[in-house]
Length: 147
Length: 248
Image (cartoon, rainbow over all chains, first blue to last red; front, side):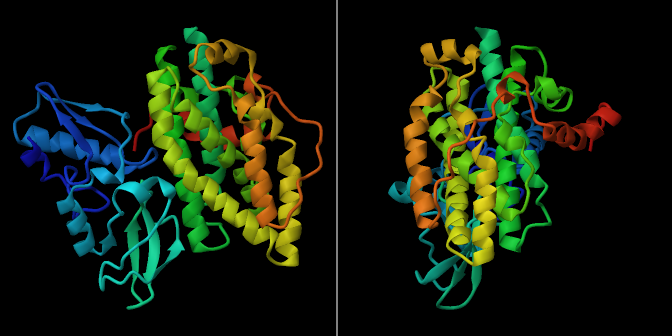
């Protein structure tokens, strides 16, 4: 089932699947349990629709989709493979673990790897991203916010 | 008890919904692109909170969140008066956000420990986002207060305007008292000192003084609203009321 859902891309960041992102929380006999990333993320509806059609396509029409809020999704749930895909796509993945709740935004440039970066805007093109700029190579980039 | 719980969820949801709607008025009009993005993102987070709170409030009433958002009239809204105040200039918007986000972050921190699982889950999820809202507002307070003569004058005026609506954030409407006793709702009165300290710290960084105490304006929780709320609703509710059942 996770294999089936690994073909469902995130609608806003298509390089990464809903499984990599940690949105698919549980697969039971009767339902797939998903969780929203950000409270107001408009992609949540599109994600549910995409999962629905992938389930139907793979012959799992009888499975329901349930939404669970608790425990709240965190960026720690993004898989290591997902982090690599984000980096390759040009989005700096969020730091893991301890720094998460401190709102610390240490970002490494996804292109040249430099730690010399600065924040341009804490709010970016989607609720999950902030805008940064690399001071070494000059490239602007998105940071997936710690959450 | 179920009625009181549903009513409390409406208070929480209406705060988020009305402020989200207000902030969305800035979309495409903010002083610069990054601020436009920020305000739109914050509005989106707030509308997301409202969706969850109103869905929960509606379950006890047999209606969905859209019905509550788009088919209630002014007197049935339970939001605090602060969130319905006009955006004014950018400084007044920031001053309003400053008071509200710092309050909501403390409230949601406590609400995430509620004995009601759904309220706790919504708050635990949203509190991480509200921390960003508070930091955004705090930084702009400092930037405007400790900026130019004009930015300083504007933020002083903005803060002066919104200050009268601060006390209502810490007033407990009577139907909420039993929920506090049963561990469902946090007692906002106990959060006042911590909020005061946060406000004072940021005003210190902004080289601003605390506004003078003034008579508090209250009543939003029982439907006594300012004239501004009706105008917000007329914009927000027009489409679903004019075209019932309309879909994208």
